[in-house]
Image (cartoon, rainbow, N blue to C red):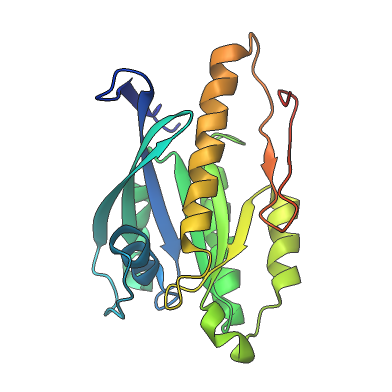
Length: 213
């Protein structure tokens, strides 16, 4: 079972501070490291395959509290598969990243989801399916609708991104932060456990759930 997010008080003493472990999973060369660099450092870096795991932090000051992400960028090579579960243990959120120009990487993301379903209880963590490399849309092998449909059937967040052009990168991390904060608010206000809400990252962003006001 995942550990609870650590919470405290922000320096201003007004909003709580939440620390969340966020893990990037996916096949090698789908752009996990580039996404992390773009989000944290706001520049594009084409990097060699990650060895083991890289670590980043990012802090967001939002209306509902301060969110500190501890981002773990895992290696995608097959030889590291046996140790990757050690990195996502205790996570509060996971990005399942695939390359829209490579259909096999979506299949691999589905494989990772199966592993996560064995490790975590339903709705215990926030999981986002991320189709990266939108800048190569002319070469795509995975239609947007295919990713959307799979995410919908599994109740995942979904967005297509480009680490190179910065398309959607901040948006998907923001959606994760907002979902995590909403869950904190629901846990604090609801006398009984509540089913998770859903997030639609399309043009008409809607949110439904049994605790929705």
